[in-house]
Amino acid sequence: MNTEFSRLSEKYRSELLENIIPFWEKHSIDRENGGFFTCLDRQGHVYDTDKFIWLQGRQVWMFTSLYNHLQKNERWLKIAEDGATFLEKYGRDTEGNWYFSLTSEGKPLISPYNIFSDCFATMAFAQLSKATGKAA
Image (tube, rainbow, N blue to C red; front, side, top):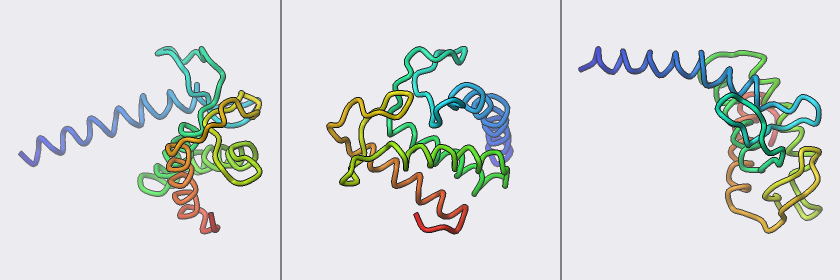
């Protein structure tokens, strides 16, 4: 049984590091405006440039978690920090409430707030704080 778990663990690790993470690194990062594209097809083409705050938070959390728990890959930390910068700059209204979605340039689209935006932003900045030692 233990060898089966080891085999599955290696299979999932390989899939994550060789396919899943490279896909998101290559296709989701908006190198022009910052942040991450949410709506990608299986080939990585962006079919909608709206940016949802929950995914911005999840991406920051994911890349920081990879850095914190799997490998101290500075590229992952940089991706997370850049995503966090986009979140900090555009993600909240003047009272500190997280938007639901933004244009690719960071303008608010949907401002009825959503608990998922709050949750994923909190998770993102907590994980980033753990990586950098800076207060969230």
